[in-house]
Length: 213
Image (cartoon, rainbow, N blue to C red; front, side, top):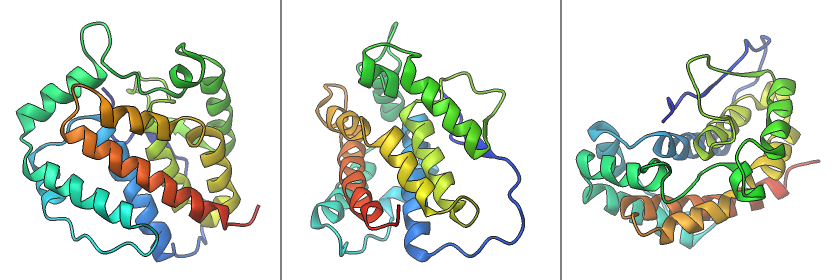
């Protein structure tokens, strides 16, 4: 599939402020989801998930439970099994069990209007796709990575861009994708990824609802 670092931000003007702690956690979580959806985790990534320090969420007990389930799934996982699972879910012969693209979920076809709208927004935000990446930009991994990037660039872009990107490109379909991932026949470890992703999007939506327009 694609490199976890699917997009890169063009050089930011100097003078940005320090990122708030809660926003750093949000950016890191989107980055983790992007990495797990871009390619199967290697042994180092699995070990990090096994040892993750899970704190009780003040926002959602379901979110805390999802983190615990993901860590437990990582303890039971191995790189060869995850390679097979990822291939069955997202690649397959011809196509995988799931098609993790916004255009597919929203229209039933690839390379449709949702992708065109996303490309317009990426250009406006100054986010360029790496030349060696061949996957369309509306892949779930790429969108999570981009959301992480938008959060870390809040001082330059403004908090309203986070909300706008989420509403336009993540909220319309990604929770449904994560729900499908939890029930996919080929999913074991990735069922836990789906549960964590679904709960995190619910928490993040409530957080973004509190941001100014």
